[in-house]
Image (tube, rainbow, N blue to C red; front, side, top):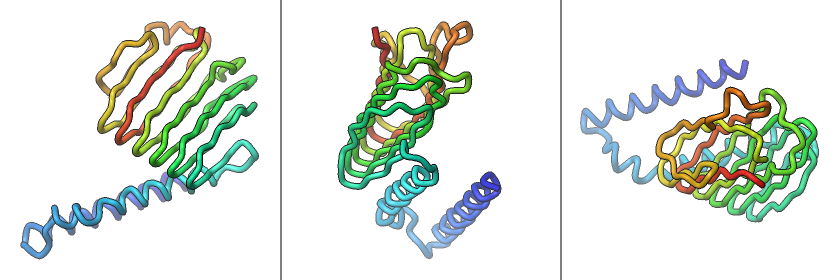
Length: 197
């Protein structure tokens, strides 16, 4: 059902964009003027989607806020935090961390997983920012696979090396006993993955 709704949304978006390009070709609409005027709506829509997605989950470990920082220490196997105009500083401990989501518009994300006791086999963490940096701290023994979708900013991998591209995998990923997949979406901001210890 969710896949069907997503396909429907993308189908409608493609039809609208195609119609605007067609009107631009016939001189009815100036495409670049339209984009220049309406681009803030994209940021508003993205923020709305991020907040709605975070509220879709149930439970006390999920939180959404507007205009404010979140500084939380939680014991949870899954996270779901979002904020607009604020930072999220999250320290997580867990006996079987599975992942979750965190998003910020005009704010930074700092996710400390250094106290997690064990990572589940399919640990996956999705992090999103529009204007903000992301920092993830992992235990030294956990291998990481990183997939990014970014516009501007640098990526610093464990060990302090800068990485250019949109995919990174720890050298020991295939043999590591515990691993995590990080799915990162950023527009403007730096990304740093660090190891504790």
